[in-house]
Length: 321
Image (cartoon, rainbow, N blue to C red; front, side, top):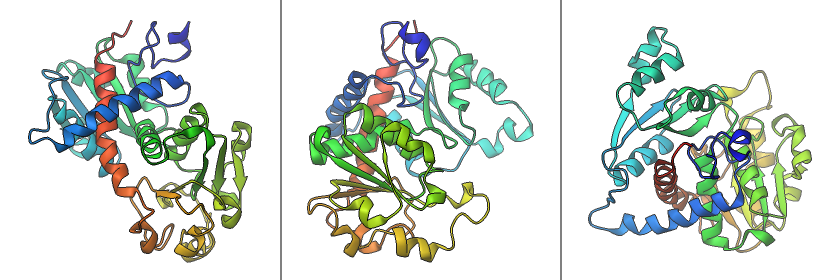
């Protein structure tokens, strides 16, 4: 039974929550990307709204700080004509000791239709999805080190937009992979979409050893990792998640694994450079590259609105059963 193996899907194989890219069928991913494409034109209209979520209430529950993700989810929901409630977690009852599930129960009693959740604990969105009312949909906006599915999907949309076909690409993911929920979501998506060569590039302390079991080529040398790549995805050094001296210094990291114009020449001439943000200029990427002609970092943000509109409109239209 498909829906018992994957809590994101109903008995018809339709998406009712978005918790992780892991386990999603290729057809579901393509459906999201195709739907996102249809929403891109909304950005160019004088009135940037469609009525697909009119009368629905979307609660943004961000237990961790966020700029791009929170803002683009809010824009996406409003462009779908939803009522959007941004919960200020620091001033909510969770600061007084209320449990996560009690918070969800009380918000559900306020007739919530969708929760967009970012949480420091891996699995928190799954827990919410298991305990919320059947009509309520949950979107994972990043949980711990586990997953960031909408970032993964917008990354796939960006790659498809600029490279068209996934089946002959070499994609290098560079930097702090061990702490990156984005890297995990990207790897699951790239694998499902048939990318033949996925490389994880970084120092031994920041690249998990189990990636080889997923068919990922692990490289501890930057030149080896990005040589001949079609796509380079740079990752932020997540100092807030690191315990102990995992790196000698930010300067040494930039010297060995920072993307500079000179290193970028090792990739294919038409390679694109991506980054989920926020960018640490001079640590993982040089400003000349971040602002250069091969960078698609700002289009990623624009595509993110359309992808999040697609996710919310699709799951809101599917019954939980």
